[in-house]
Image 1 (cartoon, rainbow, N blue to C red):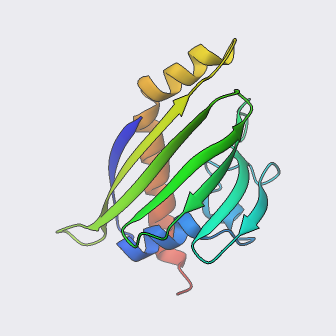
Image 2 (tube, rainbow, N blue to C red):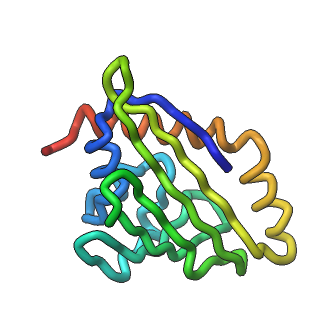
Length: 148
């Protein structure tokens, strides 16, 4: 899945929203993260390992996030409910209108059984547009409430 979105959030705010693994994560990502399923497993200065799921979804992943590159936030799936892996990245660049233009790439590999067609549709169907709208809304809301 690949998608681009525009947000009023600055590139720094986008990065902070993506890398905030505090108790605020469930609030920041309330439209796409099931706070009851969220579990922070490890946290370093420029990386984190967390178990995450979307509310109502049969899927969960344990992902290792890395933001050691100042321009990109990356993640790698190290464990999943669908038996596969995957990876992704987010790059936020300043927009000429203010805010940011955000580019997202997200792949899933190795899904098995009944979950395989659902994962395929998630990454090749109209879900990219839905995620782009939800993420843009999340970043816009974050920009309005950013404590920094």
